Amino acid sequence: MNTLGRRIVKAMEESPVGSMSVFIYTKQCRDAGINPDAIRPEELPLLVQRLNEVLPYFAGKKSNEIIQKISMLSSNHGESRW
Image (cartoon, rainbow, N blue to C red; front, side, top):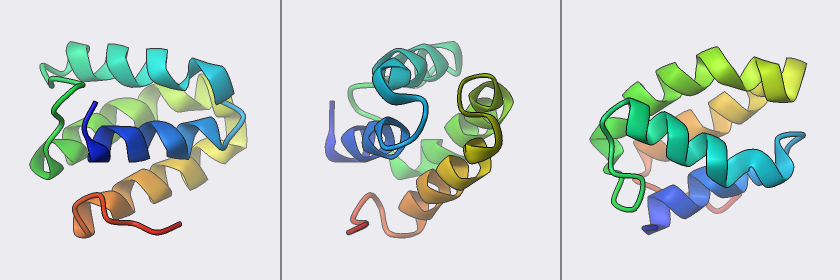
C-alpha cells in the first residue's frame, strides 16, 4: 500500500471503523476499479464517493468527519500531518 492508501486507512482506523478499515478501503477501491496498493490523488474523489455511501453503516455520525479527513488528503496529495 502506498503512502496515500496508508493515510486513508489511518483516518478510518482512528474512528469507530477501527479494525474494519483495511477491508473497507480495499473493497471500495476494487469495486471502483482503483488499485488499493497504488491509489493516486486523482482517484480519491471516486473513493470518497463510495466511502460516503458505506461508512455510515460502520461509523454512524462520525462518517462525515472521516470523509472530511480523507477528502483533505487530495488537496495535499497524501501529505497531511494530522
